[in-house]
Image 1 (cartoon, rainbow, N blue to C red):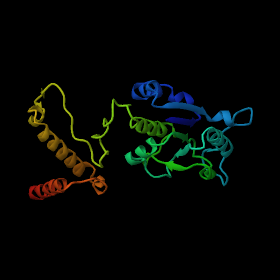
Image 2 (cartoon, rainbow, N blue to C red):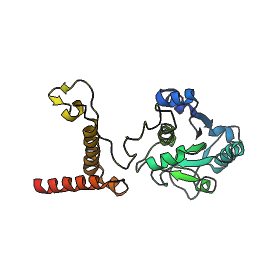
Image 3 (cartoon, one colour):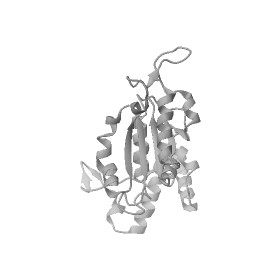
Image 4 (cartoon, rainbow, N blue to C red):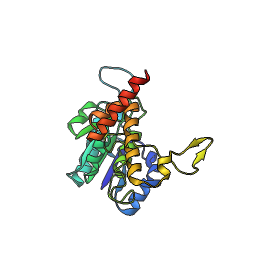
Length: 246
């Protein structure tokens, strides 16, 4: 797979892409990252990429010409490229979208900046994605988040098939809690069930912990979660217990 990152600040990606899993994935040949400097697609000697907005108002807006020139250059190399703008107007990026994108061969992630981009760019992209309802300086951090979430889903990147199957959001639930040595720390003990070696009981405990965490912390996820009859009965028992506590 290849992920291109179109940005005004190419140096931003130097350290993250050379560390940890993102670096290992490149060494393994699972993915290639290419950072593209948007200024290379300007036509004036000062390499201007922004201008004042029509109609007035604060801030500057990224110009349409260099953006489209860069998009066209990448698509000329590969017509199958999925072009994505990172911006606040798109739907929220989630695990399902990460899995979808991980099945593609080539992504171009466009990092917005300033007050935003000339809105006509939407005629030239495939989709816009947001990472949440808050304001950031630019699209570099969102692009890196998408790249990270997608890369870790590629075969072999995390050490083999199935390495991500039990993680948060994979089945629409938060992940169960994890523990390691020491068994007791300042009076806080590891749950006894994890120490007894009964793998069937451990699996049941972990599933129930994931359900309980999701019910308590992110009940909105349950609408899309894949739940068995036993899961639903456990959730019902949690609700009954909470009612009794009142």
